[in-house]
Image (cartoon, rainbow, N blue to C red; front, top):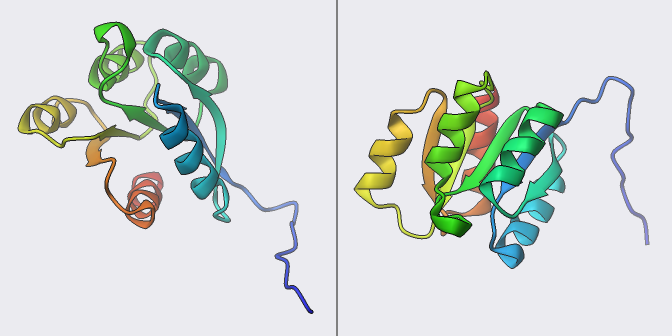
Length: 134
């Protein structure tokens, strides 16, 4: 049985992502799926907003995936607003189990951010990331 492997080269650059999501099984599955692409890598994952903010500021990822509903009443839009205030301009996707108009409005007020349903196919999330990363 013959297998084809893509050879790694020095000029290969993968876009680094930070994911902020307290739903461990979803975050692990999405992170694994995105890391299997040739151009994305999950650099770190945080289970809550404060940890996510610290990771994003320390790692300076190329993009951020953030759950809307986080522990302690925190929201993904509040986390992104704080990150923007601290100078982080990385594109971001706010993921939510229910894409309510309120989530859309809040996300639209944040520069370089968009909202998507967690029910979206992974390929759609990947395409949205690729588009936001240029």
